[in-house]
Image (tube, rainbow, N blue to C red; front, side, top):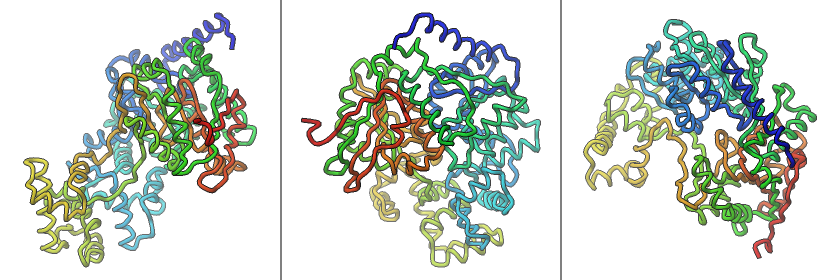
Length: 573
């Protein structure tokens, strides 16, 4: 790994030249194709500084908001995409909604139930999301969503974007103006979201960034074709950021080899071609210290013999103090454990015993909770949405029939709830109000626990949460103690760590079918590898319970130096 000083200087010159070209360009619409760790945020900051005034920074990934606020907050309003649309929704009049409309993420679960109840088709909330994401009202689903949303005077994530988009399209003068709008992770946007950016760029210059090698959200109707289209768009000037200052040389080489093998096998056929290089002026020392990817082949993984968790815990315990301190100072996790959910959770159970500060991040699905109804009735005893939530969570005898009639006739739900039902639930709503405003008695605590069949501590915790979802928890930082995040490959987007462990690195899991590898799995592999700042461990198992498993075929795709470790019963002796 010998590198001449002249090579390092040339790398620095080329990287600086890209930023200079970006800042000197007078194009209103700019696109950055940026692989993992290639300095998007740095270029966002320079571009916002050059634009002057407060800009707007949007990202699709919630985990990135905190970092962007830290790095860009003095130059731009920083939001998630959906958060910004909610912000706009409260500032422009939306057709069919009154002032003070409700923002309720699980709304489409209720709307799908209503559509089925009215006999308008066997649809689920995913069908409604798909129609909104693709701007497709051919089956009338979007119209039904808007109609029922207006009935409840409420919106959720996707329909609020749709409503704001249609308002801005019909009222161009109301499109907000900024010196510059920067948009991150564009490869994860769907048609609804890309259309929204198209509207924003009618009033402001935009700088879009993304990487079609990291497109992971096809399940929500996003497509890397949108960023590929911008790469060829005559109204956009393209800039590539080739130098990765996050990953070591072996990781960058592995990513390039994965792309090469993927394309040889017919995957990533429409990929935007570009360079991806290790920025050795920053990464030479780490590259020399960690020249290999490590493959740990655990002989077995069971509850009684959790070798994967034991191995990962041991390796985290060996991380040098200086690397722990570096991760704390630079505000990234010391260790990141990623993979399929059941492997990550099994590893976390072992890790957490040795490192109680380790955190497990998992994406909880949306659900309808009676407490959501009581919140609303505590504010407004006639809340349409409040009563609809309670009818779902605690239905009365003739609820379905009465609800169908009210929906068909556009009648208030307060007209169909029985008197004793109304009295009972308003009394509980009053207790919830008192809990917020005054505190409640032991008798009232017992009553709430009995009615909701949940311990009071859980009720308090649920009431204290923002229904839109809190930001992901951050591991507690203590001097000399590694910070550890365990999450899925999808959840790892937006994160990086000194030491990365990809667990469950087996055929049948990752990839699911080694003879039919998908673009999505390849992108997940690239994302997983490129979270690494120092050392990457690929951890497989021979037996999962009693099932024999082969190591992942992806090992053959890497084509870089790999240190193999056999982890069996005598490994720890």
